[in-house]
Image (cartoon, rainbow, N blue to C red):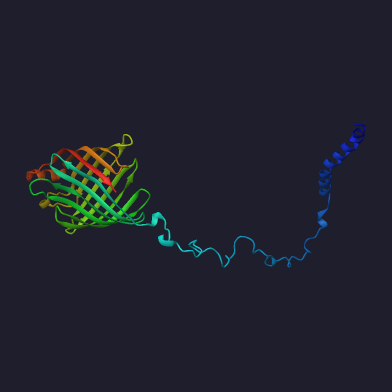
Length: 295
């Protein structure tokens, strides 16, 4: 203990010197005269970056034995072939949005769509209409074959050809299908027939989900024409308005949905008087039952 006490003064003095030395050096550097240090006389020409060996640094040309562009490194893919991304594979699908019976009119309504392609372009075949179950069992349908392509995040465009069995005429078709605000499924299609008649079909549908299986689906459709066609009970302007409310039950991974519903159809404007003159009905309401599915 006496020896330690003997050296304590020297230890304290050394610590003070160590702490003071950086400050002393800084003060000394600040008092130096740098004006006499002339850097202009130095020869910088010999300092060349090209003489430096930077081959070990990232970048530059890849070596001759670099990895192949398809990352196979020369190894075959075996019996399954080269893998591809799922989004680039063409696929197909069938959707039956409506296959039901309308009790009042004693007819079967249908709306069927099939497609082949990928997320960037598809070929679509679509048909909708009704088939009578009595008398001559006449089938009225509007079918189209179209090219489909996305226009934006929520909207898709389609263009092609169509045929209407009700007036026995073919047409050029163009349409926009997508999701409007508040998740309203919307479609608008225009048909230009060979005689110059233009038909415009507008539709909107909303799915009100009650739980994981029960869904209420209200739907409205509106049809308009560009000119009169008395042979087919058509007048210029809006001609028909159709509404329906369905209660569906989704089953089998939501791919199969039987439903019951109520539909109401009415004829509008001058077409209403024209059909009355031909002793045809202008207002129809009916209970409906059917199924919708896809695969």
